Length: 334
Image 1 (tube, rainbow, N blue to C red):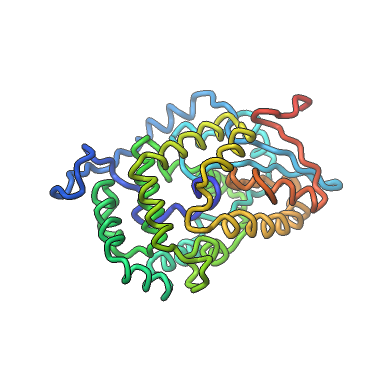
Image 2: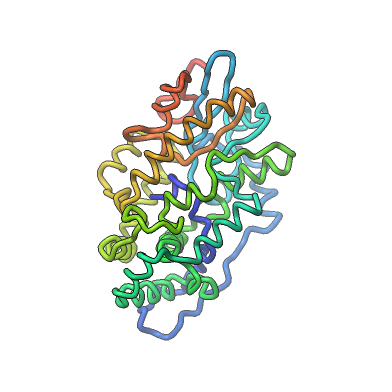
């Protein structure tokens, strides 16, 4: 469920190659074909098509200042990177784009990659004491065709995320088509500033990759077992499919129901750190950014917009008037 709640799933090796068959993990190494990437002609053809607004777009007003907030998802398919008419209109007017992180900033990328290569002392102890979990994760990485050259150098939580992404990639989803990443690429192409609502270290700490030994940042044996069981049973793919469907239709009510019933944000004990704490931090930082950049375009994972203490509620406490422009329940007076 971090697929719409945090930007860190662009982990080294997370882009798996689709296995040719669901062979047993005890078998010989699978023949994993190289990933197929769209050609320039594919991009050109897709750019000529009409695309609907996906996700949910809000207008934010505070005094004389207006901004736009888009709920995103951090993986996708090629057609999704092209904005619909209402989203494109807001993008054209924006002097800058604000994202959770700037995925194109070299220092940010270096910080993330360094952190994803090491476990905290407490996490290392957990893994040493549970060699069966290490063996199970290694076997699943082979089955799911996770890139082996980077696998052994990943921190435990980075490995878990890589397995989750590799699993859902079998349904055609790719981190390369994450909405945030492609918004950043668009902004860079036209020379618009890309503003970060968080630092890399803040997001690493929320994901348990910040090098801290607090229990809140620890993947316990039970946590890891639950995640691996959910991947093996197909539950993770089913939840991702539901999440994607609700994102595409902009159905916040259905997304909130999914959040309440799936128990997925309890995985690794990260709900408070991944959503609540980060929502407060981002809400506090959005207000001065909007004052500095009127008509700012902001893009944040859609999971930040539902549940208790969601980002929309906190922005209203910061003095913003919030109006939904796309998705189910959108204001028709536009």
